[in-house]
Image 1 (cartoon, helix red, strand yellow):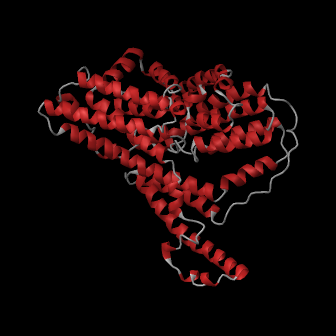
Image 2 (tube, helix red, strand yellow; image 1 turned 90 degrees about the vertical axis):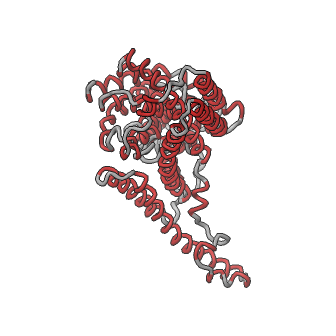
Image 3 (tube, helix red, strand yellow; image 1 turned 60 degrees about the vertical axis):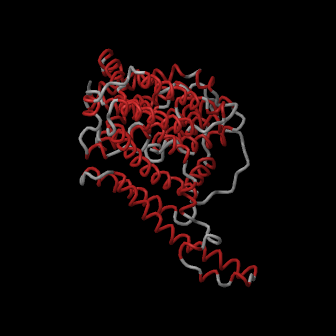
Length: 481
């Protein structure tokens, strides 16, 4: 479900700039046969990523293979030059960068999946559906909740949750469902842009040490502009009145432990922030510590639920051969336990985590060969930072914003903090220009299949583009060039 949360490395802050000295002294390989072959391999793998729905091939598979081939060719290139160390050092650096991202995202995904298992999001959805709201009120409520939830629960999860509310209320009102889904996608992407936890690209920028945790909130007003402008324009076509009467579902209640887990998630975020800002330790340390506490609480929760279930079976069904189950201890009660934290972790999006591995290694390999240095000089030296960062946001509507942002971070162009905020903003909201430009849009197209489509979104791309341009203007006006 995630492509998200998530949600790259504080290790950069603890080391001198890696690879720069190696790239300055090492022979250039960007214009060699091996350098060109690596670019071709990456492009071919990414064509399979873009055609995931057509080929029915998980996006992680082609990029993992491409990463392996690229680094084998890099090792061959440096070995032929008589250098047997540079490629290995560069590979280990990129692998360590991925490792910190992996564990951070794993912890964040585990918390979100646990909250989902405890029916926190289901209870919120049921409450919204049961409220006596008009179509216009539902439209604005789902958009506002998507905007303010996505900074904590990643934009993909938020979009799916609010999209389900739109479809449950709208039912056969095709126009409302289509416009409501577009509104949710734009709001979720906009909300994720002003928080380090709202989108993986913002998380990458924060962990890289380019922008401090509190610095992202300078993007709140520009992010709000990018959502509110198209939201106001699209709201004109929504019919005034109440939704069609529907049968009420049974109210969904959160399971035991839901609120303590939610509070623990907030504590974990605070721990990650403070350990990074006050102690200069990697933020992943705080996240993994919180995950450990969640596991301990899950142990308590599993024993409680197992006890309840054992009592019910014994009392109601008189199953004699289960009378000794209450004597089972520790993590060996999987047969009877309802809550299992390891099963929750298994439901994390492993395809997404493996996709990040391929992206980090592929882009890191191209950087080692010198391609990103050439690209940075071409884009930023020729166009200037403001225009280049604005165009990068448009590119992220066609290409996944994760490799785009990682490429910018790897280039390390000389920019002010406000320019780094600008590229963070544009890569976060640029994916809203097209339905295929963000994970939230792709997921909702599958959820509202046949109603929220590529062409339905394209009809309002002009309004979203207007919000995109005005958000850039707002950022430059408020935060400066």
